[in-house]
Length: 137
Image (cartoon, rainbow, N blue to C red; front, side):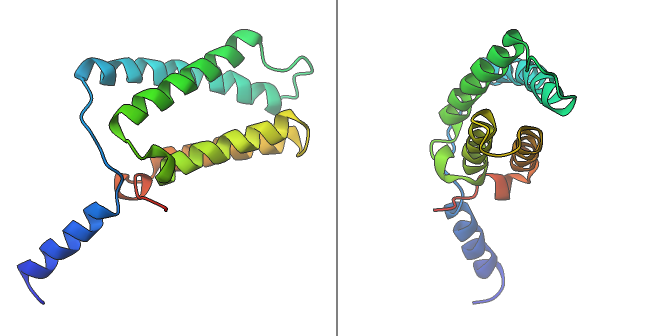
């Protein structure tokens, strides 16, 4: 096949490789933007405490802020991307949580592992949409 029929067929194959996406109410979209901003603040302070070797660790307020807003973001993202756990972005989130758990339990060096978790999260979150929401399995 050549020409327009070939391009349409390739586009349909590309769409089939992406996770199912549903519409979210506009209010949920705006809410998730505010929650994402709060998550960045909490996560930034969390990361900074590990990078400057704060002996007391991150302040509890920012730890809870990062954790709760992260969970809320997973829910709001799950409303739109029903197969989030199978997409590149979702797997990146679970790898990030695994790395944070390894750092928390001192199974890997804390500063380097927390930084690696943030790098994984940043890469997974900022990839182009056709890669970020591609189904991995």
